[in-house]
Length: 162
Image 1 (cartoon, rainbow, N blue to C red):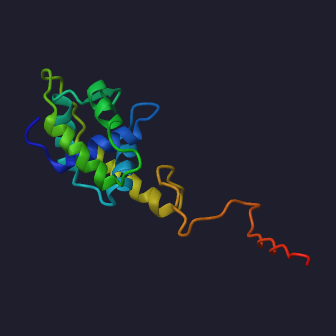
Image 2: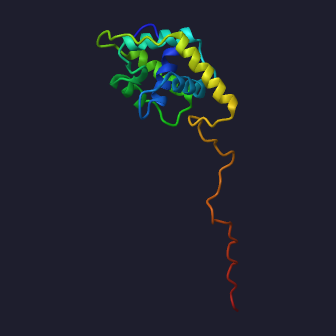
Image 3: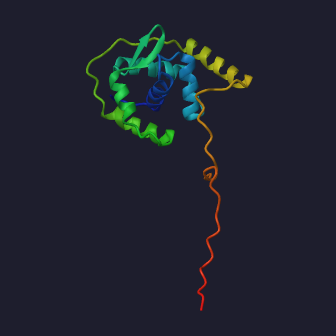
């Protein structure tokens, strides 16, 4: 698949994250992109990337929702699990570079206006104080000890009786 854009790998990873149990809506995709990268690309770039990935057979559509195809699912499964998102995006870009599509598929047409509405809804939900379920759990700063385990003093040395 040539050329590969940064948005392609980001979008593929976001759809993989957002469509765990069912196909992802544009709002869920935007929330996943915000979680992975922290900033969301322009609507036109996202719309072009969705169409490009669909033509190459990596994304499918069900009732206006996006899901990964079997080839894209294999790419996501080979990513390192505990790596940071930047490392996952780098590995996914390499997998996209090595990918050769079997044939052309139908393009998915999600308009920039739909994506713009999803971005505005995501920003509104972020400002409302509602909890984003895609946010990872915060990592502890210091390693915690197991509960119930406390430091014990060593036993004193035995004295000899003379």
